[in-house]
Amino acid sequence: MKRILSMILAIAVLMTFSLPMIGCSKAEKTVKAFRVKSAELAVYGEKITTAFGKAYINGEISREQLVDLNKATGAFTKSLGAYRDAVSAAEKIVRSGQPLPRDALSVLDRLFDTEVVAAFAAIAQKLGVLSIGQSETIQNLISGARLIILAIRALISDVRTEFESAGVAYA
Amino acid sequence: MPDINKIFSLARRIAEAIAEGRIEASAIKDMTDDQLAEFDTEAYQALLDAQKHNEELVQIDGE
Image (cartoon, rainbow over all chains, first blue to last red; front, top):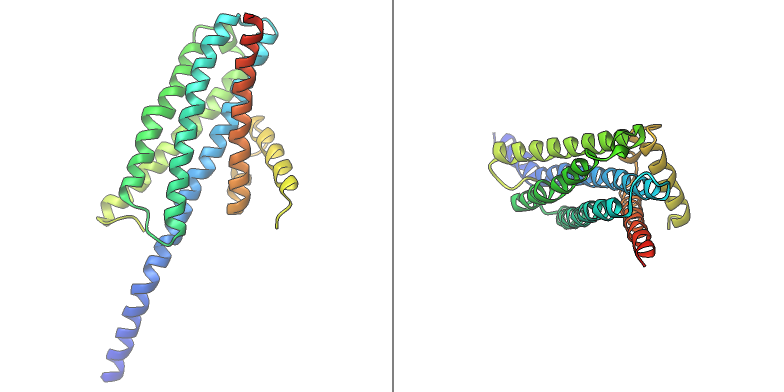
């Protein structure tokens, strides 16, 4: 009986110390997923921005139109930078062995929706009234970026669900 | 110490392929943490460079 109780206690102790480690691995994977999507969005952002520059050089858009598009892509670039900084901050936390805190997710969520998504929407809106918006290349790039944005939203939603079902800081 | 030039070269090739739809993002997912960090930094720097280039274009023609 005493031996069985000792074994149960040993397993309980083992699980107490191992669960945070398992949790930290899951949190690291989650933050890595955010980083992957951040990189993909930067790739598409660069291609879209470059396409605008080429369109101007080719005479497909005017200087004023490029100035207007530059404002939109500039806002997108800046917002993506802020989002990347938030992902880096989350990475530091989980790599130090701590669980991903709920407010780190809130920061990512807020930055993403109010800044990144809003800035991207502004680019798409401006393209809507330009002929280059009809080009297959630009439409493919915009579609690709939209898919990544949807994926990030789904990721945030998944993590939020984890927090809500766990009731504690995500580990 | 990983060869930084090789990582950057890999990052550029993957970025091109993804934007052209030739490969899926699984190539990025398979990267190690260090490779991913380098790739992300490289991708964002490329975005900054493209933005700067476009801003210079309108400055040149506005003079």
